[in-house]
Length: 607
Ligand code: ADP
Image (cartoon, rainbow, N blue to C red; front, top):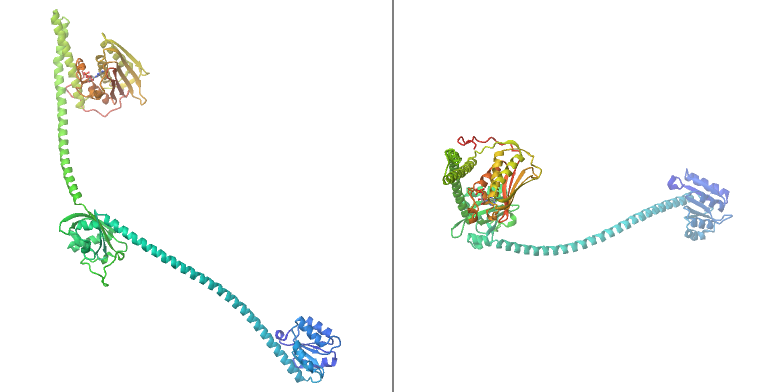
């Protein structure tokens, strides 16, 4: 163990003289109590000790029997053994001293001159030197460490510096590109501003103004110049926007109320009276909006003044955007429209009144007709009855001329009765008093009878009457049989009347939507396309010399269609002039339950 680590030094004394060994060991033991002391009599033993343990001081005899002290010293150096060598020489060997020191010996002592003091001084010096050397070594180690750390730091600093340089370079190029961007943006902004000004100025129908936050007009577009008649120099930076509108020009309360509305809504629209430079007023529809960041509460409601710096507030500092147009003309038009609408409403009310009067007159007319018809039918029936009796010879034989005359009276009376009946039907329908009397019947009963009638009517004509049924002959119907019969009789009558020869076909079928279809087709004179709708009007007959030869009232189809409608169905016609006509009746076979009808006219019992 070394002296530094243990506190007490370790000594190896090498000498072939036993007495010297003991003497020296004794001296050392006394001078350094607790010291470890080793002894070796030969160079060989010395090397063994040196390699086997750690020593602070080696007291080495210069002359040894086996290996000479110089060689051991060289070995110590060569093997890097950490021990302080004090060479013990004989008298006369002192000239070796310089060599010994060169070879790394710490000191040398001359045998025979070694006393307690000499030995102790030499050992103390050696130990002090060793301790100093150790410290130096340690400090130099520390220094080495520190220098490593410093080197490391220096390297780190170098890197940091390089990075810094890079950053600086990046910053420089960034700032250059930023400068370029700013340049570019400024140019774009200039272009945008130029474009916006152009846009503002091209809105010649609208005034567009911007004000500072105190209300001073800052921009005054071409439209504003035209509508208000002021050159921009008279307005921009000079006029408060209130000066341009009559209602707020002098009324502070009105201006305050307007500002409050703008503040509340952000954008406020209203109609104001604009004042042209000439004093001429016009109606302006105005929208006033706050510019972003506007401080309207700072809006000066008295007068616009420059701020402390003597400059007018700029757009960026907030303010108003005022956009509007002259709507005087529109307002006048609206006024006119309102007047027209009023007139129309008055006229409409008048028309409604007249319509009601007409309806009432129609109702009265129908009632009158119903009454008159009834009054006429009674004497007519008497005339027909008596003419039948006369014609039948009940009142004695008649001469031929008399028979002809009586026959004529009867026939004309029947015509008249037919006409009266039709008029009565129409009157009842118009008065809303046509009653339906639904009953159960089988379709073939009605159609069979109809075919028979058609054949009787066709006697004397080259006219074949046929019935083509598509599976509905036995259909059980529940509707007003009398009205159905009346409609079909009218159609068959017409078909026979307007067909000289050919065919009259009655076709029955069921439509896909469950309606009973009866089609009456003839090969008669046909109806011009232009008249097909009109023939369903009252008293309407197809014009032309040819039709005049046919008798009729022109009421049959009108009544038939109204009946069809009342039965919940339709009646329509298709025809080709000169080829023939088809009439289509479509009705529900079961009459839908209907709301109760008004009370029937008391004066017309069923015929
Ligand atoms: P009218 O008593 O005159 O027959 P309608 O109302 O029954 O009255 O018919 C109106 C008109 O429609 C007829 O006058 C005739 O001109 C035309 N018309 C009706 N049915 C036929 C038909 N089958 N063929 C040709 N014309 C017809």
